[in-house]
Image (cartoon, rainbow, N blue to C red; front, top):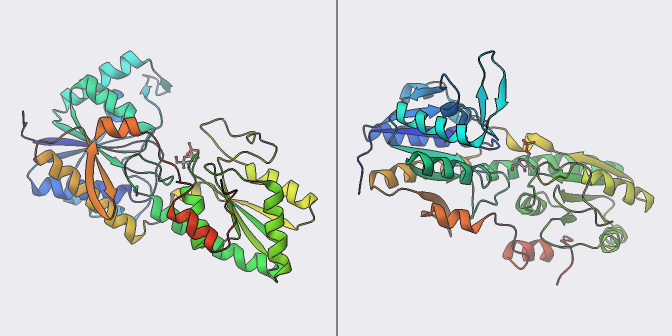
Length: 362
Ligand code: F6P
């Protein structure tokens, strides 16, 4: 049965990225235009779990300072539920208490629905909390990894690609001057979207991604052949989630944190006679003012989320498919899981057609 919306909560959860504030702005502006009250929950679901609760009323005045042009999230975010202790310490709490507190928080704030801007990791967790609290939810995908289910674009990806492309442009000139191989390690966990697309836009010579097996000897052959054809330097993009040439993961790859695999390649390539430098781009990929494409996507996603609620549609996730904004069921989205690069897809073919080494063709 359609429930009239009067008051909604907005949560950003999981890793931050650029475009979150633009999404919060869009939800607020569209909701206020419908006469709804909007509450911004602080630090992901934690704002409803800690006591006293942490939240703020969002109005047009909340955006008088132009947060929406900035990276990060004005609401704060979290990766795991915690609780504030009386002495101010914050510690993890058990699942049962998290569920109880969350439910209590939703009731106390009299929220009719929650709009959750999250990634593939945090979305199912909050969806479960919402189910227990019997509150309607709309999801909005965000992640620089661009691996959120059912959407070909997530908030934050376009800006991250811009950051990587810009870094590669800068590295290209110094690599050319010194005739070096420049390794560029790019985030993305187990998905290679950011690495692959940045390899094309940053005019790389090779890119190694988790979805496509590579051969180290063939990578070396590729770099040598380019040298023989007169290209004295090379840009090699390495997705943080790939295995080392010896088949092992780097020390810091524990399935949650990834870092440092490119340093192993540096050692290997040096032994093979190349002059190599390594650049691990790190969290800079998650920040910077959102590019126009992310502002547009965040705005369209925010508006769509409020439209769905106004129509009484709940437990949906707003997505971008084939150039349009649409929505899928939350259940379907969770079932789909993360979406990696299609090894036979157009972007891989484009990269190969440009002479970029993208691993082995099966
Ligand atoms: O999922 C987004 C992401 O930025 C990954 O690309 C990266 O591996 C990870 O988060 C870093 O997480 P943290 O901020 O916890 O170090």
